[in-house]
Structures are given as C-alpha cells and as structure tokens.
Length: 355
Image 1 (cartoon, rainbow, N blue to C red):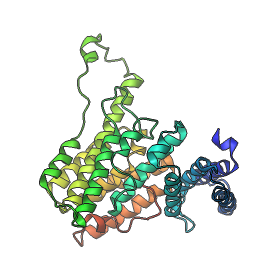
Image 2 (image 1 turned 30 degrees about the horizontal axis):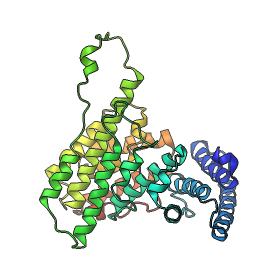
Image 3 (image 1 turned 180 degrees about the vertical axis):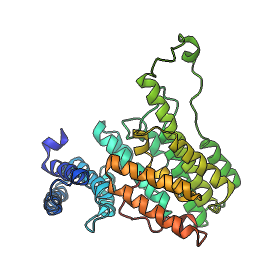
Image 4 (image 1 turned 90 degrees about the horizontal axis):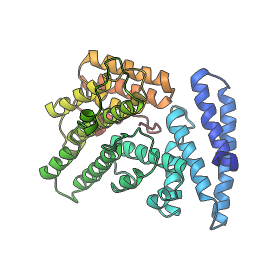
C-alpha cells in the first residue's frame, strides 16, 4: 500500500524487484537497471530536499524508500561498484534519529515498517559483530523489536525468540568495545553470564505431549509443530554462532581452541541436519559464515561451500557470494597464519549485508 501511495517508495520497490529478477533469470539489461536506480535516487533527493524545507516532511515515506535501497545494495548489488550500502545505512540512522529514535519509530504500529526495521537492526548488529564495532542500537532495543512483526520465524508456543540471542550479541559487542578501550575490566564472571544466557536451546516436553492422544506413525507433523521446531533450530544455530563470537572476539581465544571448535562443530551439525530446501537455511547465512570460517576440516569446508552455493541458488542474493569469497579466503590463509577474529573477516565485502 505504501508503494502505491508514494512515488519514491514505488521506484525503490521496482529497483529491488528488477535487480532480484535479473539475478534470478537475467531478464532486463544491467544498463536498464542502472537507469531505474538513478531515477529512484533522483526522486529520493527530491524527497530529502522537501523534508529539509518542511519540518513536517514525509520522513516515514523517506525511511521506507531508504530501507529498500539499503537492502537492495546490501543483499543484491553489493558486488557492484555503484553499491552504497554504508551510505544508505547512515541515511536510515539519520532519519530514525530525526523521527525520535528507534523505540519511537517501532512504536508507530506499522507492521511493514516494524518488519523492515527488525531486519535493519539485525544487519546493523551483524556488521558490527563481524567488523569488531559497537552496534548502532542498545541491547534493550531487542525487547521492543520482539513486540511486533520480525523477519525470523517464531516459536508458536512463545518459548524462545531470536531477539534474546541478538540482545546478548549486542551486549557482548558493547562489552568488547568497553574492554578494548580500557573503560571496563575484563571479567570472567561477565563471560559466565554470557555463556549461561546463550546456552543452546532445545524444545522441552509440553503438557500437550502427555495429554494428547498418541499420534500414528503415519500422521505427519502439523504446520504448528514444524514451525516451532524450525524456530528452535534457528535459535540454537545462532546461539552456537554467538558463543563462537564470545570466545573468539571477546575472550581472544584462538580458532583451534576446544571451546571454539566445540561450538563450531555443534553449529555446523545443527545446520547440516536441516533438510533441504528450507527457509531456515536461508535465514542462517551469518552462522554458516561464522562456523564455516572456523571449520578446520577440508571435507567439512567443502560441504559448507556446497551449502552456501545451494542457498545462493535458492535466494539469488549476491551477498551470499561475498560470504563464499571470504570463506575461501579464510580457509586459504588459515593454513599459513593464526588469525584474530578481526583479521579473519577483514576481507569481507563491506558493502554486503550478512544475515
């Protein structure tokens, strides 16, 4: 509805759709896509000028459009020289700040905007995580994000949510920044708290399991059962990835440390146990990147490379190719040098969004 009401949002939507179609089947030429992108950027500048001249300018419309361009450049066009993911990110942050902050914007009640902002906050966090920077939003924002529509699948029983994992990752990123700048002392007690909060989650026995009539072996699981199981799997995959980040980035342990390898193997085992095709795999590119980077077995590395290629064929996001490229770079360098977390991901395309 927003796209139909505002030209700049419609243009941004068309740019996103046309670029994805080109990645899928090669329809339209690259030159046509560039023309449409330039038209959209020109319309965006007009909107920005209008907002600057009027205090009550249509900032939310502008936010929708810039978010779409951010996802377009970061997911689909990150390999192109024209990619401006970081500039669009700065634009989104500036608009959010002008609108009163992330909590205020999330409280507007617009489901599509809430969904897009949940994805933006996550990609901001994952970029901060991979490049060793503090995220743009405080850990508490994840409690607000979780109150509305989000990009990830939910546990239908309400037992677990990815937002709790993202909140811990955010806390770890800020803690890492504080200890690096000597603003806070490194504390093993604090690490224990992170470990406890990120202990991998498994579905537990429910009362319904005991009170419901036994199902026949031939009865397929209900959609609700499948959705909950997938939500638990995704949370568990991200928990293992977050623990790898804790031990590597925050604690500074080497890649071959038993704790790092324990969660590397557990994360990859959980990922490889998911039957293909699956939306869960499409949502697990970041854990595949993190756990895959720490895999030390050539055979397993080959499996990770194959899985990443499968995901690319499924979703056709150029950012997945950026993940494949950095994994191959890491595996090549790992045989020659011991890398810190920052050194490991130093060659990751900064214009790519990894989610």
